[in-house]
Length: 152
Image (tube, rainbow, N blue to C red; front, side, top):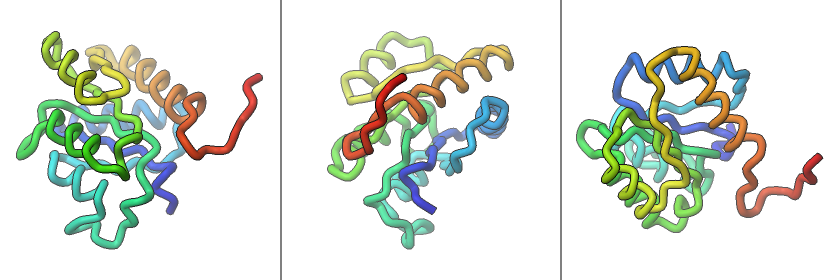
């Protein structure tokens, strides 16, 4: 499997994880999704450590959907470490959170997040948001080194 097509979902809440996976499926997303349930697991996946020792860390996910409130190591620390490494520095990171704190929003952007999205409470709204995120980051957005695709 080519991890450059993978979505990395970093989410500790099982209900939010399932909701996000259902929303991706309902939105027609066919890319594989790797779930990390805490900060260290996300970093292990990104850098091919421990349980992911056989994974090539030069193959970064197409996008990381990152929750902020995570056990063991918070989302801000995951973001800092991802941006500090040359392999993951340019990887798109979408903060997907329930936080309404302005300080979280500002800090995420200051640390290099590409987008900050608050999780809607209603399922239909959540599906629409996830569909929009997936469409933009998986279909429209171009990453460095990706082949030119003319618009239109």
